[in-house]
Image (tube, rainbow, N blue to C red; front, side, top):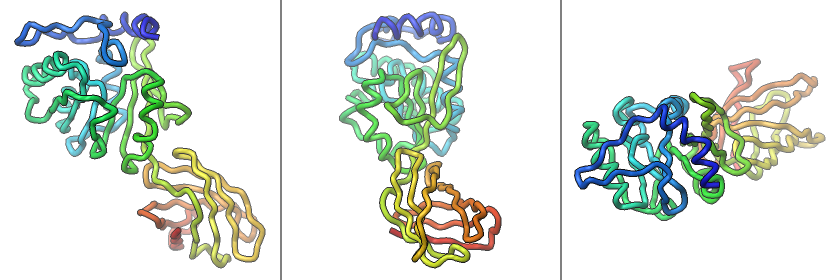
Length: 275
């Protein structure tokens, strides 16, 4: 796998990555050098910019780069968008090299490089998380990532995160690819809906898989119907058949254990739900 990653990305990186100057200590990272869990292959500039664009990074964000390497993703997030950025890098020499790069780029006031293990450090305050890790490592991180604050944006170079379907896939030059997710709110379980026109209380029994879900939509005293829906962070959408058999689309927002919203066909309708 290490050889495969190097072969896939080495040519693109040599063509697209900015050269990394030696640090003040004389340390110079070498392409494909061994790390704790992966070899070091920096993200090509063309894909790096698309990753930050896909995540809609702004100066209000706190970006965490897991496996920061020479710090280029954290540095670019700070330099181009004014974001605060934290890189977590296991190798002490590489971490110090990244700190020197941030200083040379004039963004050391916005960029922090932590010498640490991505599986031990706390990055729960991130609004954006960037990854360039092996699929097995992404899968290991999945339980942490999918349970981050709803609306957190996650973007990965090359590899997906287990069976979690990306919200968006995009491409850089030379065949490079990235994937983007928004952490969904959790609505798994039973919800009681009020305010649906023509129906008394409705029970929604939800089975959720990441940002997608299906549910039994059961009006009081009436047969249930199976519906499907989707979450985009805290935004929720689903459709159901009303008492005339006409499909209606609900759009709302999840707030803790409750949600509220309205119908596309009649924005004056106000529908609420609670667990």
